[in-house]
Every structure is written in C-alpha cells, then in structure tokens.
Length: 398
Image (tube, rainbow, N blue to C red; front, side, top):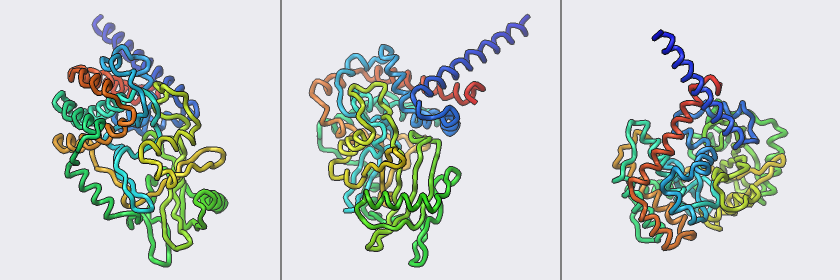
C-alpha cells in the first residue's frame, strides 16, 4: 500500500512538473512568434542557470509581472510613474563604449530591450537579476545591501555629486587607454595578412560566401558613406543571451586611409523585452533602436550606430573596439566588491531615469519599505528559478 501511494505521488509530481514546463514553453513561444520551437528549445538549453535564463527571456519576466501585478507590493504605489527604461538592467549589462572620436560612454550598453513603462521596473529587474546571480553562490540580497543600492540610485536620479568606486574608475581609465584599436588577440594584422585570428563563439559560426561578402560590402559602403574593403568575415548564430536566435555578421574592414575596424551587424529584436508592460504603442524596429540609442547614449552616438536593412530585416551596426569593456562580475565576485560595482551602475540607471523623474516619484520610492522590496525580489526570483528548473529538467521541454 505504501509503495502504491509513493508511486502515485511520484506520478502526480511528474505530471504537474511536465504541465508547468509545457505551460512555460507555450508562453515563451507566444512571446517569440518569429522563432521556431526548435530555436526556443536550443535557447533554453543554452541558459546555464536561472540568472542566464532571466537574461535570455526578458519578455517572459515582464509578462509575469503584467499578469501578477497584485502580488508585487511595489506595483500599486509606483506603476503610475512612467518613462523610458532600459528594460534589461542587470550587473553584466553595463560597460564602456568608445566612438571614432575616442569619446567614451559608461552606462547601459544594450539598446535591445528599452522602451516606455513604469520606470521603477528597471530598478526591480536589477535587484532581481542581482539576487539570482548571488543565489548561484548560495547567497542573496539583503535589506542592508538594497538600502545601499537605493541610495546610489537616488543620487543618480537627483543628479547629485557621486564618486565612482575604484572598479569603475579603473574600467574607464582602461577604456580610454585602449581606445579605438582592435585587440590583437582577435586579429592578424602584420602588414601582409589581415584576418580574424579566432572567432567569437566558434561553435556557432559559419563561413560567408564570396557573394555574401560582396553584398555586405555594397551595403556598408552605402550606409557608412565611405569606400571600404572586407578583409575577412563570418556569420554567427548563437542561442544564449537575450539576442539568442538572432543572426550576426562579424566583419574585418579597411577604410581608404588603411585604418582597420571590426564591425558587427547584429539582427535587431522585433520587439523590446519590455513590450508586455509597455505604456506606449511600439514604434517600428528601426525607429525604436534610434530612440533607445539617443536616450541611453546621446544624439551624438546615432551616427556610429546606423540601422541597416539586410534581406528586409533591420540590423544594428556597432564597432568592436578594445576600449569597449565591461567589469567581470558574477556569483564569485566578493559581496563587498559587488555592492560597490552595483552602486555605480545604479547611479547611472538613476541618471537614465532623470528625464522621467519627479519629486513625487522619488518620495513614493522612499516610502517603500525595504522588506517590501525584498519580498518582491524573492517573488520574481522564485518564479524565474522555478520556470528555469521546470523547463530544463522536464521531458516536456526536450
């Protein structure tokens, strides 16, 4: 009898587990109608852990919020304060960028998921991502740390004086020092031969035909308004990350003045990750990327990131430079170091929200109890962790 009961319990648990996985998979498929089930399954499989799962499926996270607003203590007092948000704010999505004039930008480095919605959700996503990352080392955010991070955000959103930690200062100094050159570990450029020494994510790369290279050269000349030669190139289709399943072209080009540049053409996401909670109608993909780059980096940066059409699909052009850097931060980063790095990033996030902020928003933020923040972080972390485990462990998603 006991054996029979145990067997029934196991079978019921397996059925519920599979149902949850099926439900989550169906939901993800509905959020990515442009991707096949096969691609989505590969993307799920490529997610190493719950933190990378959060990074990979941004709309899935926001869809949960959209359908479970009442479960979040922060929603009612803060959702009415809307404006532009980065969308995918997390500790590995901040860094430095260098343009042709060696001008540097430090902040959110990805325009894929930005849009309009309740701006505080950037803050909540950053907290949730940080908590999931810390969970990997059997730790989690606590109220003391949340309070420190909130204070850094307040300094940014009020445009108060702020001093970066040594980690960010060193990152900025390193970026300025390295500048616009291409790191020699990636290319061979000895005056006789110019080509990629190795490829990014080699398992997911593919060769380009001569016809494809000729076509890409014509498109680049048209958009860069400059004569160029393509010295080497390859295609890249990886499945990890928020851009998983979207195509890329990595190209080593040379201008008329013999200067080299590594150009990446990255297929643009059809919708921003925040679309389930968007408070404005979505613009065309090209216009959305232009607006996001303008708001995140400034109008001067638009000329360096044209949106290029390839086979009718928009691609974002960006330069791979040695001065484009991020701080290596993960679950193994000492907690004291992590909080310093995260504070710098939340200061920049606050500055991004400056144009949408108001005294009423700031005062409402300050009224949210630290315990309420912690509860919401745990709720969202639990949802993403459970979904990740269901999807990666259940036969229904294989």
